[in-house]
Length: 317
Ligand code: GDP
Image (cartoon, rainbow, N blue to C red; front, side, top):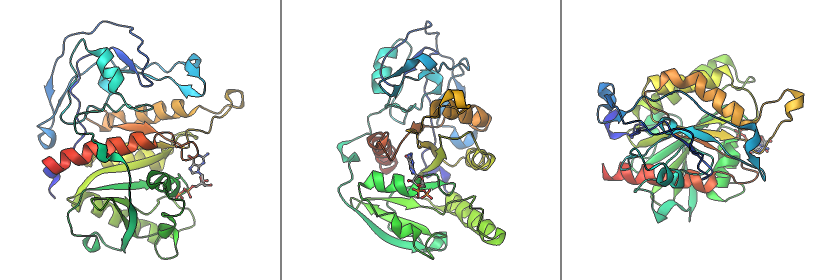
């Protein structure tokens, strides 16, 4: 298990001043000086700063269908190669990807766009996966979370991910090669009630083996349905990844589904915040997260930029 080849979430943060992820700055406090602490040995190259655990999601901030989310700086994901120092809140705000906590760093390149995407192979064991060592991102989530829709949206193809839904392929690790240089990997959906218990356990085991043994896995993209309250199985999955130091990005899906408050439904951004507060204890630093919709393509370009910066850093190290 060569986890040091992987990219761990890192945070170089020095302020509790909130930034607004849709680029409007609401300055609500002064920036205190940074205090640093060293993390556990597996992420000893990383450091982060403790800051007040506050977040402000204002109900009144909905503008033209766009939601303004305020985040304190210690909740941002600062990618490798980038740093954030006290006093440059405005500059940081301009670099936060819309609808996310992800700061755009120097490794994001013009290679983010998908020019070509092709299905390569289905594997039933991690050992059968492609061996060319290209960087890869794995998509995983509960059945029906919108994984196929997101995959199709990322590659701008209507039916590419259908390959993963063909009989016999739903329990496989499906590799799609993008721009001949990196992979999107579709993992079996979990929590499918109709699957026999034995099959479910089997998928869990091989997916977990894949997570811990795959050296060229840059990050897992864990899909969470933002239109419903947090589910235990998703929380368990996220905390397992956190505890096993598997680099993870939370991708909140179906963010276009806005339930009416008067019907007791929570807004996507409320579900997003609740989910994060429930898993916070399992992470040394805030994992990257992003809100998406395959209906409106919200978050599509942002995910690709995030993948670009993770990938380019990984390739250099
Ligand atoms: P999978 O089982 O995770 O691959 O999920 P699918 O991509 O097949 O989607 C499951 C259902 O959710 C389908 O009815 C989709 O049309 C719907 N869906 C997927 N993504 C979105 C989204 O972003 N917004 C909305 N409103 N519906 C979605």
